[in-house]
Length: 298
Image (tube, rainbow, N blue to C red; front, side, top):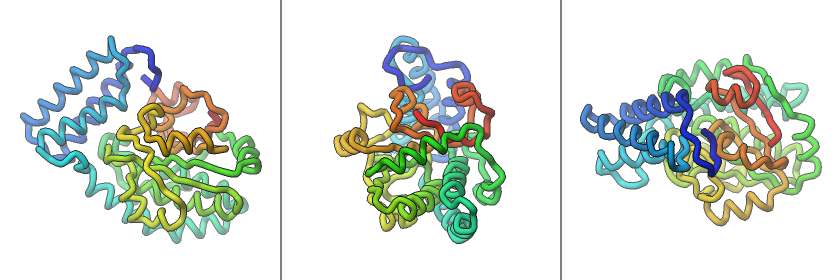
């Protein structure tokens, strides 16, 4: 179920996914059996309530994180995936020079940067076998994945006209690839004012301001918090600064599946979605195969 305001029960495949994600989060948080059972009971309750209330997957993932924090008696901003996020950023940063060289030597540096940014979206502990991911292997294979849907011409045309671009980030680790893409955008479109947005609070392995600072993204571009506490961008629950910037930006680049799910219903032609398709539901929605890269105009 995507981010519509109408009540639609969460699809069976998505129910399985959100349960698996909750189990994965419980393992990362090192919950004991009883604590995990408490969390899974919360998931079951949320899924049942989604039959009569406008609850979407992103809401449940947030509720799960809060339930885990409650079981641990931890602070509100406790980062369940903190250690793996730090590792993702560290490993991805080791590939910066390699990716820079690939971009510089490409016949189309911008398109190579787009490919690297899109392929980097595989660093997702909320979707990739729910926590089982070989970051180095995925980074080594970034160049082996191609686009199935590729709205590059509308994207280039939009950039030529634009004065401002809002870049909505997704995951840690992946954010290093985003930084290289943003650097290339700045090089090719020097008059374009770019702002990157990250999550307000830790949720799964999504990037926050701490991640942006740690990899040096804040030295490359202006970075703000979207105000989102979800693994996605539910517009009416973002902060006023983000809402204003979203409304005024000439182009909005949305990274990753969570942002895709939550922003797709807006049907906004300023929007371009850049991601790797990771599940059957999104593959069907996009009319592509699982694992494909897509650059889609909204």
